[in-house]
Structure formats: structure tokens, C-alpha cells
Image (cartoon, rainbow, N blue to C red; front, side, top):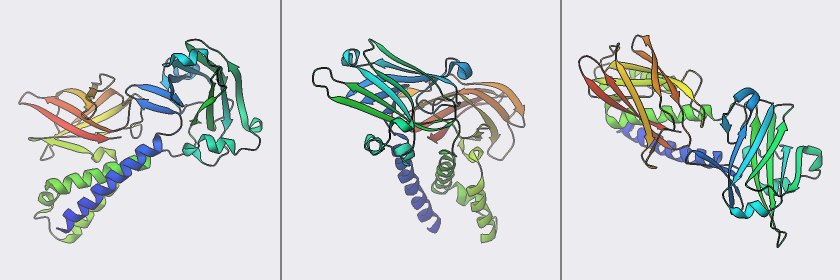
Length: 327
């Protein structure tokens, strides 16, 4: 009963944390909708993307940028009204102290806006597509400000989006790891697997060691089982990031710990709540031995609950394992 109550508390903590995380990352005027970045200038909407052609080719970014280099900001209008509205664009250093939570009211409190401005493009009417080119000379935290003026009423609509250029902090990865560990612990306890594993293994000392192991293991500890098969994964480059193609290392073994080798593996995924799949077609590119397989081409384009379906075919059987994942 103690373990069950503990699991319930951890699960509730996970739900609350996931909600707070979603609220925290949905900052500024740029939001993620399906596989598109959308900027909302009041009720006016446009597709928003940023390119860094010198270092990232045709790769698109929504907000945060990997390097201080030439950057191209593009807005493709969804509302025809934007085609006739003068639009100006400003980038300032983030001096608000609010970071990801900066809003227009925080910008209005800045005494010398020009003094913290690193780029400004005066208002102009740009039919169809609005494009801005700016070369960043340094990494850091910045805020983009897009303003559109209604010609008839002179009313100004604005969108604010904080963003980072280069790596300027630890980001959200410790939170994601903690959430994954707590979710895994809840799964083990509520499914009864933890109890069965501990059965016959002796004193509470063994239980303590097990719990410690659950809390300190990395992302690779997240696994799923189906029949006599267990699949776990790790992400060598760190926890998955939205809109970044990355690789996984899949580990396939029997439920009694014997590595499964020479298997044919196919991977698909999707979001059950949104009824769509992965934006890429990941595939296993190399068998690393000892039950490990390199999976390339993984990419998630939005936050939320995902299910990754792994089909493992061996000479003896075919098994399907579903890995739950919350980003």
C-alpha cells in the first residue's frame, strides 16, 4: 500500500509538472501547431520560420537559434489583411529579467528601447511574405518584436517572442529527465512489475538500492515490454528536442535479460490524441551488438504525449512493443 500511494503521488506530480512545462514553453507570439510554427500578431496569424543558411542549410527554426550568424526571418501571411499593413521588426537584448516569460508590457517598461536594440527594420508594406535578414554578432538572449499597423485606424498589433542565440543555459533537459524517471517509476509500481522484481530479493536494503537506481538512471531506463520482449532506448545527444532530427540507440532483450541480436526492426510513431504520426520515417541503420541498434531520423514536431511503436522480427517470432513518451 505504501508503494501504491507513493506511485499515485509521483504520477500526480508528473501530470502537474507536464502541465506547467507546456505552459512554460508556449511563450511569446510563436506557437507550435501541427508541424508549423505560427506567429500570432493579435488575431492575425502567419507561418513563421527562421533560417541560418551558413551553418544549417535549409533547416527551419521556430525561435531558438544554434549559432550567432546570418539569420533569415520569414513570415508567410495566413490573413490577407497583413498584406496591406505596414509591418516593422525589432530585435532587442533581453534586459527584462523575464526570460521566456517576457511580454509586451515588459517591453514597454524599458526606458531606452533604442539603447538595447540590436536590429530594427522600419515599417513597410510587404505583400505575401515578410522577410528580414540580420547577422548576429554574439550569442545571448534576445526578444523579437513584430508590429503591424492597421491602415484605417492606425491601431498597432504586436507580437513578442523571446529566443536564444547559441547555448546560454541548461534548458529544459533536467526537467524532462526527471519527468521520464518519475513516469517510469509509476509505471513499474502500478503494473506490479516492481513488486514481482523485488519478490524474494531480501531485505529493505535491496529495495532501497532499487529505488535509488530508478532515480539515477538516464533516459535509457525508459522501456516497454510485450510478451517475452523488452525494448529500451537512449538518446546519445541528450533528451529529444522539438524539431531536431536526432538518433536513438534501441536495446532489445528478452524479459529475462538476454540480448536479441540479428533482428529486423521497424519503427513508427504518433500522437494518439492528435491522430497523426511522426513527421519523419526513422530507420535502423546499424546493429551495434549486444542487442543494441542505431535508429536514425527521429524527430518530434510538437510537445505532448507520443507513442513509439517498435516492431522486432527474429527467426523465432515477431513482436510489437509500444514505448510511451511525453515531451
